[in-house]
Amino acid sequence: MGKFRCFRRIITALICSALLLSVSVPVSAKSLTPAEENAGQPVAIRLSFVGDCTLGTDVNFGGVRFTDYYAKYGPDYFLTGVRSFFETDDLTVVNLEGTLTTSKSRANKTFAFKGDPSYTKILTGSGVEACNFANNHNRDYGNQSFTDTTNALDRAGIAWVCDDNVRILDVKGVKVGLAGIYELAALTGCDSLVKKDIETLKAQGADVICVEFHWGIEGDSVPDKNQVTLAHNAINYGADLVVGSHPHVLQGIETYKGKQIVYSMGNFCFGGNSNPKDKDTMLYQMNFQLSAPDAAGHRTITATAENVIPCRLSSVTTSNNYQPTTVTGSEARRVIAKIQQRSDAAAAKYHTTADTIVLDPAFQ
Image (cartoon, rainbow, N blue to C red; front, side, top):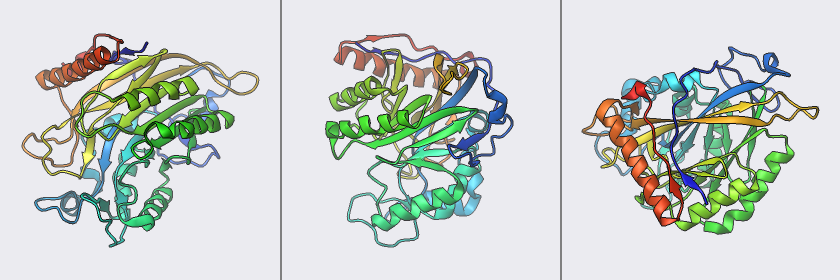
């Protein structure tokens, strides 16, 4: 059975590094430690993940919208509260939920999100190198909006994953494989795609495999059976980390066969609501220690350590100003307690064992 838990923050900061595509094309300003310096040596890498980032708005929204903030404050405004974490890790991955397009062909749906293609500057200016684009808003303005968005990401040097489009990034000499799966349409029927993606990444020589799912039920604080089944299967197939998004609220964390599953990271830089009732979120970091490469060039994970950083999706409590920020003191303790309670609830529902969540002293 799995074990729902959260983990201690690593105290020692890891050295910031270069992030390269598998074809050795730089995609990031994190270039303090060239990959060549780690050749033949053990290495440690830190990966950061956050939840739903809707870099835009619905044209039908009233009030002060994400686009209004962009026009007033520019791209550097939005992630200023978490930029220090993104710029000092080795890879930052967000869930991009919405399109970056100039198309006016809005889909006939309740919510349809778009921002200008130039909004990639929000990500590139704050140390974000990759995104999951497998979700229910990646064609909000038709197929053209999907193409417009992925073209904008490509021009900006941001790696993106979506269903059968997987990526391997060279992070300090470690081949990090990323896959993104949209579960909602197929439910457990997407299991074959999960297996295929992981097999593809293995065949391409990935040392570490991270899978992000867009799944679950909006507003539910406990993962559903499909989430648990797919997460466990992903790890059975070879994933080293599973993270999730879509419920728009935090869900618990599970350890299954020694691997972590973060069922929902909540909203993050979220233009989809000007004042969501639940503003709690997190910044999830996984630290991997890897061996020196073997004769075939493959590295083995020798140790992991996790860091859950409590956050709020807005730097003010009365509304959403689209500027996620870390929280400290009583707010941090409350957010961590919420994740603990939801981990416990999931553990009880699925007959697993919950561990105690430890809040790093820096946030107490």
